[in-house]
Amino acid sequence: MRHFKIAFFIFGLILFGCQESVHDVILSTEKEFIDFSLEKDLNPSLDETVTAEITDAEIRLTIPELADKKNLIATFSYKGDIVLVNSKKQESGVSVNDFSGPLKYIIQADDGTQKTYTIKTTWKDELKASLPHIYIDLDDDEAVILKDEYTNGSIRIEGKGEYADYNGRMGIRGRGNTSWGYAKKPYKIKLDSKASLFGMAAYKEWVLLAEYLDGTMLYNSIPYKTGRMLGMPFTNHMIPVELTINGEYQGVYTFTEHKEVGEHRIDIGKNGLLLELDTYFDETWKFKSEKYELPVMIQYPKEKDMTQGKLDEIRTDFENLEALVFDPKFPDNNYLDYFDALSFVNYIIVYQLTLNQEINHPKSTYINKLAGGKYSMGIIWDFDWGYGFQGKYKHYDMSTAELPLFWATETSGKRFFSRFMEDPRVQSLFKERWNWFRTNKYMELKAYVTSWSDLIGPVLADDHALWGNRDSSGDPAIDLQRVLNWLDARVDYLDNYVSAF
Image: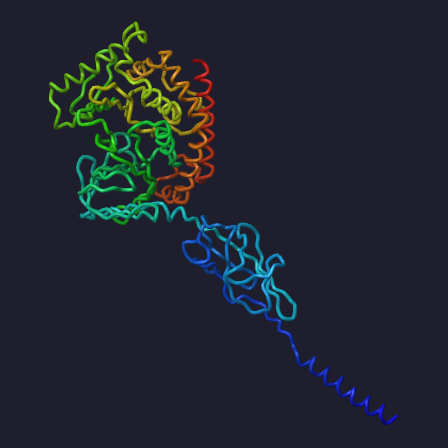
């Protein structure tokens, strides 16, 4: 009995000691993030490290729009036992998660309690930063840019990683006829030395198109891409940029090559011919043609190389072609010995698709000819008044999508150029080329226009703040859909148009 009492006493001491040690071990309740980031070195789609703002229950991140949202690795430090996402243990700098949708991080404390942090993501649109920016600083801060003479200054181009940067000297002047009268001015730039800008061949002269008439600023993305798809030579490249002059932001412009003869531009050789048909009729060397009274101006040879004898020679040769087109026997004569039908068909496809009725006047209509070759249509140029603007003073009005390219009014351009479409051989070629484009290239064109919209969309509000919305809805997504809807309707019209051939 005495041994039992002693044993019971010892057991009690042990039990009491154990109970005391259990009460001494207090498990931590701490559970919080100390820092949280997306490190550039661990996330190749990021241009820089993204550091989070941490609040009591949120982790706020501003992530570039172009990042690989579904595969991001977070780096973090914390107080607590483990970090979980969807019940899966997370390892800092290792675990990959999808940040494109709802996401919660949970910290579990030593005592088993948990705290939830909700990821709040703002998608920073990188497109604005990636749009090239041209800075022009005039030598005289008070100088006014004139149309007829150059004002000197410096030019700096920030290519934003997409294109090479550039610094140089230049002169700038206004350009255009009707477009020079608008609030937002188009410009011509002449570098002091030839340079390759935006990956294009090295030249001195370049153009900044203002695209004032349409605040969506999408219309130049369509014809020039189409021309390149059709394999049309001498088709300009169009680069959307932002422009600042003397420290004052000017909005969004389109940068392109100047219309000049030369290698990698309008490459018709030293003895070639470039004619512009335009009712402004404002060049030095020009003539009105005999049969159709077309306003023909000589763009090349250059003015300094022209003589009256050369003008007479050019006029005689052109009017020989014109006479064949005017001939009552047309098209059953040999006019195609002097005129390239394929160049005409490609040209008219572009103008039909964009409903660029400038050809009726005609205005900004170009014809080229290599020495000893045929007359060919091109370059394509000036689509400000396309897409139904000619009649509605508004682009992409759906009621214009089924309008014919050629007017009923008997203007000189309409009479001459619509004549070619009376030839069954031209009709057949047009139908063949259109069906090829419709089947193989149209969806690619729409994707290109969409990418253009994505590129300029983030800066359109800045442009509109300066120059007004100009028939833009103010929402790039809505504008894009309106343009694509109009194009789809125009394509349907052209499908019906060729079915009648």
